[in-house]
Figure 1: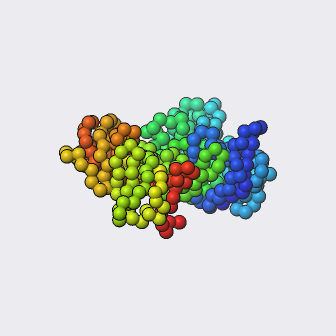
Figure 2: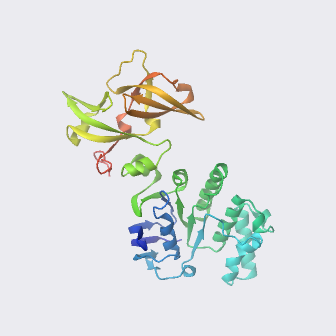
Figure 3: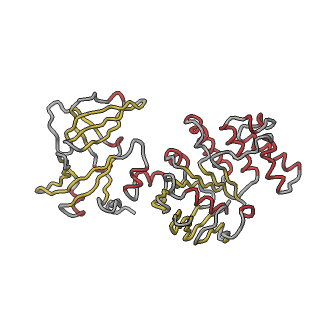
Length: 370
């Protein structure tokens, strides 16, 4: 297994800056995902680690050994691409065995490794077929088997499931997670799919425009995003974000919504300074809705109207209009949902609210949070 360290990695393609002084450590045996939209530098990072690209500045280390100048063949890594990169007219067996023959292994060792990885990935019955005849998902299994058979110190996977349909992607995610637990090797996984990153990763590196924005566990990037960008990028349905002015009235602290209405906030929030405008975020599954037959908001509730309902299996996404300009999304189980046109009271539990600086977008951390 390998520990991978990037120090001050930058990469330019002419006038285009792909990476900006990236520092990143992938721990030994870790499953780390590089997550971000297209063009954020994920694949460029992976290619630099693999040796397929040279950084403009910076150094790459494997287990404290500098490898920036080493060619790919000397790095003991295996890479799996979006397309399976198999030789179509070779059999599955020959595809898996090809890099092993290049290593000049004995016939017996090649046979042992091919049969072992084929059994591990459930493709033993495919070994005699030409690669061109196997299903796309099986082709990715073969590509992964080919990578495992060479016994690398680290696996680099560049959106390997992006060309599969949704049910097959879900199945392959589960298989990859089990594979990582079985082989225990360092895995660096590139994806723009947050569901993949959240389901698979020990840690997630969220990237934006060639920079690392946040590095943390799935729980950390979801529940404690470092800024507005991460909060909006992670989570389905998307997080609610709206402007609120904090104002004191006697011994009570209120969040005043520009479009109309206010709700009570904990007194501890006075530390932010008063009056102050902030950006509040709350996940749709954290918003609570209550019937409002009298249409009277309470201390911690806003009055709204359900305008649109989106059925989502066992749940329904409620689009609730508050005042003239504010829309808040609330996800509720189907048996607790409201009909369109219903008057409701929105409760925003303070313990689930995230506070962001409206100018910088940075999250304002809770007292005592690290």
